[in-house]
Structure formats: C-alpha cells, structure tokens
Image (cartoon, rainbow, N blue to C red):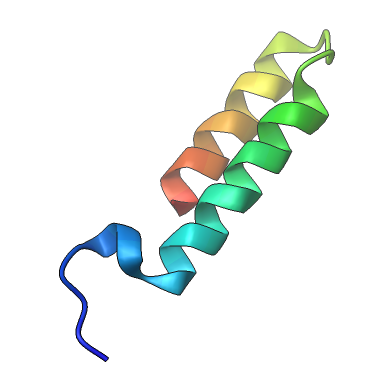
Length: 46
C-alpha cells in the first residue's frame, strides 16, 4: 500500500473521528478548564 499523504492513513482518519467525538461530547460542558484540557489532549493525539 502506497501512501501519498498522511490524510490517507487509516489511523489518522480514526484519530480525526475521535477528536470530533470529544468535541461533540464536551460542547455543552461548563467546566471550561476541564473542557480546554481535554480538547487540547484530543488534538495532541491527532
């Protein structure tokens, strides 16, 4: 399997899905420090 860009990697696509789910789960959370920390962690996973 030849990959031309990182967006074609299945693991990268799955990471994007996880990040989107985290953002959706926390969108109404009012604990902004917690929300910010979890969002930053999710993005760094990507």
